[in-house]
Image (cartoon, rainbow, N blue to C red):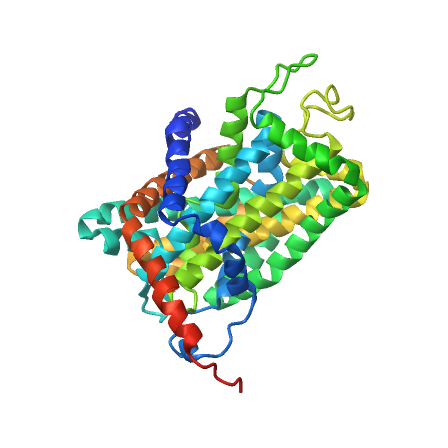
Length: 472
């Protein structure tokens, strides 16, 4: 079965899919006239400042604030892919992969914007009084009932993907770190993770968003702070590192010693694929939580969601890339190019951990260890919301507790299981989520453009002209 899944994934994540993802982002960027660049500062203002009292506040509907919505989405998106994925991209594609990761991240901001906008426009209220949104709703309601089979396909694979890539894989990674760094048995880690997960997810969207709002800033401060210390201590290597990124984005890395070199196509492929895995733009996952935002216009939440892609790819992934380049640990020859001696057999998260340890000693290794734990656990909590929304759609809001119990069980089992098969199935589920979502985004682009124009040309000027209410 593993061989079959590997062949399926090679096709699903091959050049056609990456071109579709990249092309959709480019198409939406063109149709929205580069909105992600023009309105980025305004989007951050919406995300991180409290809206002034006005008559629009009275019309806001939803379950959680824009900020909590962003934190919940980031809790699921900022994960171990930002630590291990960037390292893998560098060792396979060279420094130029970072440049192409930036490109796909900047284009992915338009994709994430479109997903969140449609999620808000076509969201529904469930029997518990909470809002539900996501690709399955804008596929069915936006494209019509004849497309419902596509919506069901997205929800089915989304519910399975949450159990794998968003849950079992994360708990397994956490368990490995707990064993290697703190000598804690995998079974103990699994039980603790399962109990903590249960306590949080049975509290519903309000508790999940509150936990995410607590965890995300802490883990971002811990990891980005450690990265910045390394970068500042080696400030003389910052410009050379950026020169390497831009140079090798368009030039092959020459062979040296036993190193066969890296061709430009590998830099592009690695940067694009790992960029997509890091920010999830195009997979439709962020749309699953965007529908819960409390706001008075779909464009507001879409802009907030867009900032998540910028944070994940342009900030967090860049930090990892710069640390690996500055320390020389990206070099698969172990020093032939960079002059830094290290174990060339290291890969992924172990390579990032070694780079931090080389620069900061034991403290650096602990920074990565705690980051993996925080990143992994927040991903487990955040992805539960994705899986729940998909499962609700499939079962018409029945058996929610059953899915919660299955999710908790998957958390515990993931810590002690061999997850090679789970990884392969999760990769397939992610790809199969992506296809119906991208089809919907392309077919509904006129709705996206119309809502955007309405907000900036009519709604926003009207709101700005209204007198502000005095805060009580």
